[in-house]
Length: 155
View 1 (cartoon, rainbow, N blue to C red):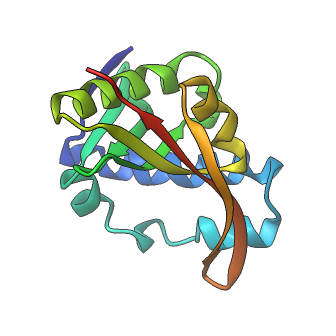
View 2 (spheres, helix red, strand yellow):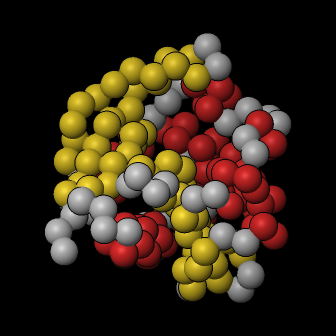
């Protein structure tokens, strides 16, 4: 497995990975209606190419297949962070996270933060994040629970 920065050719695989992961993994913690709102049928609901290209988006690959991706914004916010549903619990997320934390330190950030789903909360706790608070967020008419989380970075 190799972790590298996003390339525009990754766009379609990333959009499909997002949709499949939400629909096959996050369905364990959210209702069907919430999943449909979170991951609409239209893969292009988000401008994946533009957003991934304007952030530090790290992509894990093996044999030209994307296994997962994570986005770090310059202010320390981790936005999208997804691992392919067939590659969960194989170290893919940890490898992507390590690249993100190294970049955050290179940017001299004091902390990184995210809004983790119920599903992702345990992963981020294992990476040293602390829960600030649970929160209710709205997306396309559905209300979701997620967790505001942060991690302090040192040197």
